[in-house]
Image (cartoon, rainbow, N blue to C red):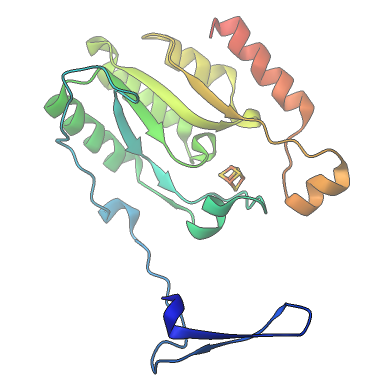
Length: 199
Ligand code: SF4
């Protein structure tokens, strides 16, 4: 609470001190879900009658991002990286699909392509749900994490959307200081995969 802190400034306007005005408020203690498998997930959400944006199940498979781009607030505040286990994701997907009747499942996270075992997860989901024509979408991918096998799995049911984050810095130096490591070749390669796959 800003009102519980006093801020002193240097003559040039920079912050000199931040002092708590209430005892026990000297430090902020970060709270976060340490065991992501135990985090709650609503498996029986309300299904609207009309078509809405994001008209699908959005299953958060991981929280946090290991890339640490310096300009990214979400990457900083959602630290540390935590992933749901494959078993838990499969369980949640099964229950939520059965209770909502949705035909699309989106695997959400800050950088879904960085999920450990993303290819195996997609294979498992397809094996279980392809017969029911459940499509899978990947809403947040770094260009270098998109590969042909991911495309092939997704195409088994129908082509869904891909959201690829193209973060480019103007020079090697800027890339280093912002910690973005995306190369133009990766962007072109993933764009080629998408085009070949018909997306
Ligand atoms: S990869 Fe994306 S989500 Fe991760 S830190 Fe960078 S900008 Fe943020």
